[in-house]
Length: 235
Image 1 (cartoon, helix red, strand yellow):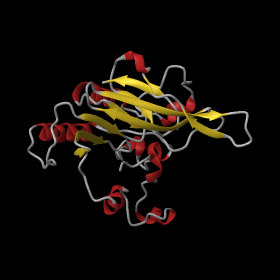
Image 2 (cartoon, rainbow, N blue to C red):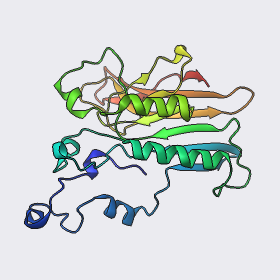
Image 3 (cartoon, one colour):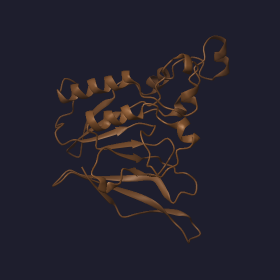
């Protein structure tokens, strides 16, 4: 489980707390951990006999600074991961590789499918407009997060959302990882492609990931999204 920007709120103290219903929590992580009690970011799983690594990233870092005293940046939709969280993720990942943390029976990091999950998108395709909305809703340290996924964790696929853009970036034929995929359960109005996707993973004979998109079926009274042929991605 990763939090989104809607899980954040204004950081109010003292008498100003009366303006928010979250009066007991200056830092919303206190409530989030109460409902989802784990601080661990890197998880090792065995699914149908296949090893899977899932890295959970909180892109709503509540950095208390002069310019973000009341957390307006996050409350308006912007995101930050932060250097401290990146360092902690790298430490946990190294511990997993060294098997100094608990891992399930049958797990092997060699050849494991590695997924990253965060709310804000680290990048968007060039054809999407870079307007004021993009500036306000962007991940401020997107380059550092991309470097984390691509160069340090060697992540295969990153699931993100935030603006519900139905994209896979870069294009499947690019043979570059990680791929960023919008994984929301809703899509923007009038968009013919749904941001909801189904992912198929094959471990043998060659590691292969297929993405199944849903496109709007027009010409009928019922406007429905229908599954499309799967798009293969070599890992």
